[in-house]
Length: 132
Image (cartoon, rainbow, N blue to C red; front, side):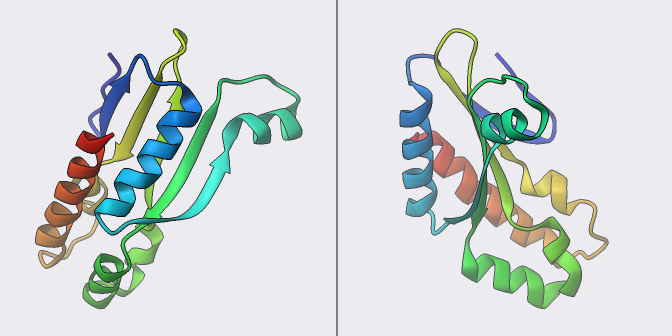
């Protein structure tokens, strides 16, 4: 199992990569997050470095109302937006989904008004992850 201190993860040992991406996008949507960006790491590394890499995508997820609240509380918090979500193929053919922990990320901001918002964002992302 892969776990990191700066993210929340879910192993999907029997879920192919493409299905994991679809389910992740849908689950994020149920919590009000849309995907603003999609970075295909496998394709990018092949194109730029001519190296092979596992199927791996970084989704830039955004909940507009939560982002607006964060921006109103801290103008430059856009440096930490959107929320990054990784979906990757594992060595055994399953998938893993990892979401950057907003509480970890927003701890960089010296503004106590951000703490409750970071907790709320984390709860929504955790619920989305549980749905996958």
